Image (tube, rainbow, N blue to C red; front, side, top):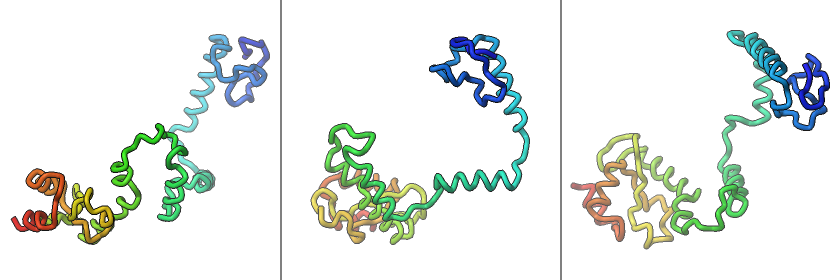
Length: 190
């Protein structure tokens, strides 16, 4: 086989079948049609040998060791998650668009709010407090209005677990602003 650009002979031992001295190593346009077909046939043969074969225990162990290095599937501690999160915030993020995110969105998607939501669900045993349904699509509802009571936004005592259906019903009846504890008690007792 020869490279179409520099006419150097490619040895059969080369893994990719590409010319090492050619500056455009990965560009298939450099090879003649005959060379491309030869490379394709070798790749098909190489892959056909693997189809349907079982890996030896030694090979499985090698693959496992490589995966350990990448830490794929490893559970991270909350402390590590926070460190990673802090390292990817603001201008350091690949999704940075010049600080256009609203303050409300920043608060609602913060780690503190996620932890608050999880704590409310766990306290209520993942059960809707209106219908008594366990699991499914749940919402953590703020008892005292989110916008007016900034100091108690992440207080576990300011949250209650409702199913998404019950949550929609509540806000349909009472609106989304100026909600109170009395409205919630009235709603739960209906």
